[in-house]
Image (cartoon, rainbow over all chains, first blue to last red; front, side, top):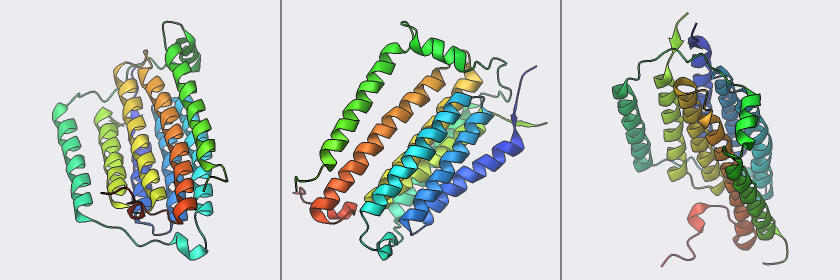
Length: 168
Length: 104
């Protein structure tokens, strides 16, 4: 038998992600916006669970909801001189809105006109064991994995270099 | 039980990306611009995982692409926030509109 995605669970999670994004954009307080982003990331992890991507969901929770939210909140704390600085004017621009609306309309037209038609998912749902085997196979993704670790090391060194004291 | 198909996930990803795009071009605070970029990266992840699950789950290409996207965006946010801190120490502002020193 082939599987389908539960419509109710999808509706709840989609509402959570889109509503959280709107809340992030609408909130005038930067700290509240950071918490809305955290909510969006957790709901996205739920969507990954719906799509049988357990490992990616857990990584999403660890990296986005854990590390990234903390990094954001620390930066907000370090760049505020007093509590009132967290409240910003509500930025609004018609060109920006028109750009985003045009993009969304184009995507929707393209997706609806494309009609892949399949509501059911294929039966195969490989797990974390297959993921690890493919990741570290020499003919698989091993080189990309090493390059990703190089990128992270370079970013870490550069971030430390930029933020160190004494080079005003 | 009724189910939702690939289109629903793609449209959701498009909506999230559009919201992130709006924030990235509209917001003035540098931290808020970075948060909007994160939103766009999350939308890309939803699209990749949905395509992978509905089209060819046995290859797991979407998993790998999403994990590498997360690595890149983690590096990007780390660098961006370090840059914001450095700029803040120099010029006491974290507004994007305040960074026009090199403008001709």
